[in-house]
Every structure is written in structure tokens, then in C-alpha cells.
Image 1: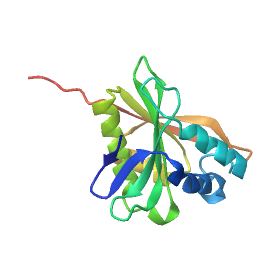
Image 2: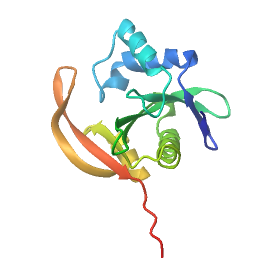
Image 3: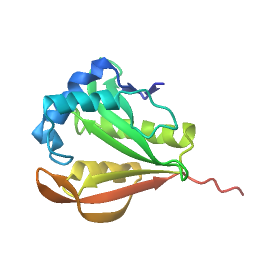
Image 4: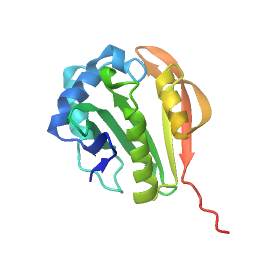
Length: 178
């Protein structure tokens, strides 16, 4: 499985994604809105879990690498996890490396995953959760069409501090027949 736009390609994690994933997991600046940075061993274990083969019935993440179509450079990763198989609801999450932020790569990746989720997987809804302090992330979700559905107080524990999170959702567009 591979998804692509004019500038990027998304493909399932493989060993070439390990270094960037570990870098993300161990970087305090990158992780400040997500969770406390991992140790190297924790990051390696997390990568092994996230890079497992995925099927529609999986309870794990479909983890995709975001790469530049022109250069092959690894720009980040994005994932999708079905959290309610019966209601066809999946959560999405993404990380873009510092040098690639603000250039539209995350928006392209999120649009590709949204299209894949609705058109190929026939999901009903996508959700996302982000810290109220992660302005870049929640502005991106809103730009793509996600609706802020609420604020969960003290929902996450990041570096021994409770953080409020926004919850976002976007539903499968319904086609109204005339």
C-alpha cells in the first residue's frame, strides 16, 4: 500500500524509518505536546510495535512514513488506528520534523489518510486529540475540516504535568441524492 500526492508519498514503516522515529521519540522539543521523551530502548520497542503488519481488523496503528516524492527524504510519519471497529471510527496522529514544518507536508499527508480512511477503508469518522498548547496541530486539523468537539481537562500527563486536550472529529461526507 502506498499513497502519494504531488510532493509526498506515504508508505508503511520499514527499517529506513527507524532512525527518524527514534529521534522524534527521544527529542524533548518534538515530544513536548505528546508525552515525556522515551529512552533509546523504549523508542526501539515502540518502533517495533508500530512497524508490525496492519490489517483492517488490527487493534494497532497503521504507521506510515511521510517522504518527499522528489528526494526520498523522510519528513515525518502519520498513523491511523481503528478505535471502534463496529462504528468504523479511527484516530489519526502525525509528526513532522522541525525543518519540514510549516510547508504543507502534514496537510497533504492528513488529506491522503483522510481520503484513504473514507474511500478505501469505508470508515465513518476520524478523530484526533492534541494538547491545547499545540497550536500548529489544532490549526492544521481545522484547516483540513476537522471540528473541535470538546476539551478534555487534565487528559494527558506530559513530563509530570497534567495537560488539557482538544478532541477533533470529521465524519464521512454523506451524499444526498436529488
